[in-house]
Image 1 (cartoon, rainbow, N blue to C red):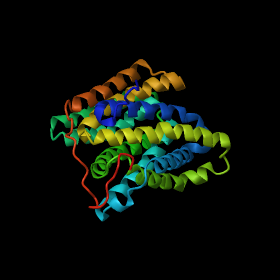
Image 2: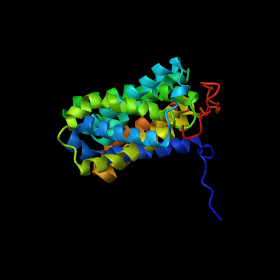
Image 3: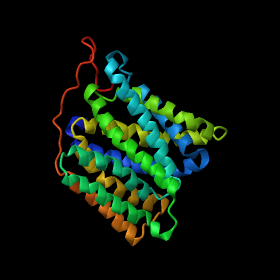
Length: 301
């Protein structure tokens, strides 16, 4: 008897989101060696370019389905993805993975708080910010402002990414839209990444980048697109509260970055802030709008 493979619809949206988080943090932790060779922008460019090739092979770009009103969101999501990737990789080059993730998480947490339409929910980003202060321990005088700034840039981008990903996910079925947005992200990263990686690309570097591209962006981007079709930005942003914990765990296991007791409290505050921001938020699944009367998109684009 052949075992049945569960379809994405059979997997709860939170399961898709958690799998995406684990893949993102594992890919980030394993990217540190590549960053030391080709730089953060070079790593972003290689990962996104190879990821774009995978998406183009798996899903044909739904060009005939694109309306003029879709173009700003598609381009915006691609550019945002490129900026977030460069910013985050530049951050983990300078500060611990868990700290970078906690700072970056301020973006989706703020989206969750604003979308909850509750004034009380706006206090949770403040609590998370307290946690970030405990993580960076500025009283020791050794805070890396450049690393924190890069993580802050990624935070802003991540908040925008969540909103745009849901909008694109509502318009297109499957993962076809990613074959449009990820090449734009790769082109965005190329502006800085190509000069940074020039002269350092070897077969070994390409092989490492190809493996990392599967962990990030291919697997998590597809999972997040599917999850956001069935979740509100509030619920998705809230679930992302677990991401700093994943970052600390994989930073410890892969990079041997052990947080202090104060930093552990900081991570706990960030996670609690995210969990408290919104308890519900499952989104009713809605069919994407037909973009063209004679175009039918299948699950792979």
